[in-house]
Length: 331
Ligand SMILES: C[S@@+](CC[C@H](N)C(=O)[O-])C[C@H]1O[C@@H](n2cnc3c(N)ncnc32)[C@H](O)[C@@H]1O
Image (tube, rainbow, N blue to C red; front, side):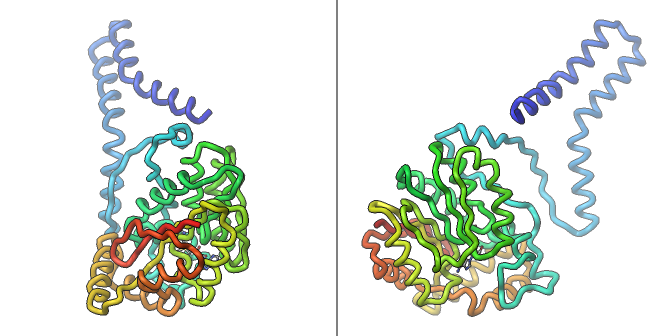
């Protein structure tokens, strides 16, 4: 329905100029009327540019940075195209200025204020966020076994579930687990379109209390790092037990280097990455302070060992940039 509406609109807009020209020719309008039609055509063509320039002017006036981006996309096309490289994420545009204005959450919690800007926060703070989610979607599609579940632990606003929901052609049961109710409220909204194809279950609970029975793919991106160490091991064991044979765990985490000098360089590089994404030095420092003792990273070696100790014997690293790592582990 939406597709038909937009396609009709495009045709109407495309024929607007020629239609005016045809009126001028067929009715043999007088020169003044032809000039009026010409002015209407020129204004019509210039309108998007004028609106864009007006926006840029306003942004400058209020000391903001801007970017003009005109795009047109139909969500339904993504569902139909099996070959698409799944990088288009649906992220809420609300800008993360949480640590600029205060009172910011300290210690860091996933409260309503964080949830409102979360999509913007994570996509500006996690290197290669889009690529990691696209990669997770590909691995999920490759290891999904019909009749089993795909579970996203720490699903937040449902960005990954939405992506895999559009990428996976066959109907599946997609489960999102998160212990933040405000996150799940956002996820519920985001996941409405894919529920035409898939069964979606959103569970508000701590992951360590959940069962992963009959799952063929479990995703846990940037979430294990928030759990106490002993709980992480317990959770990984429980995931291993719940996965069907041949099932896959896709894990992304913030990690630290085993070497203090390297860690120092990685941290500086990561901070430069955040500054490049528009965060001020004070925002970066305040968030770092708020995350202290809340997000406790392991080294890559410790993370791999924890997976092996949980039962996963086939473990590989896929992506690493700065202090963020993505791994896959097979049951
Ligand atoms: C950094 S976010 C995860 C981002 C998300 N996976 C993505 O890729 O967009 C961490 C999420 O884990 C949730 N969380 C933290 N501790 C949890 C726990 N013990 N059980 C379930 N969810 C948890 C938080 O509410 C938050 O939504």
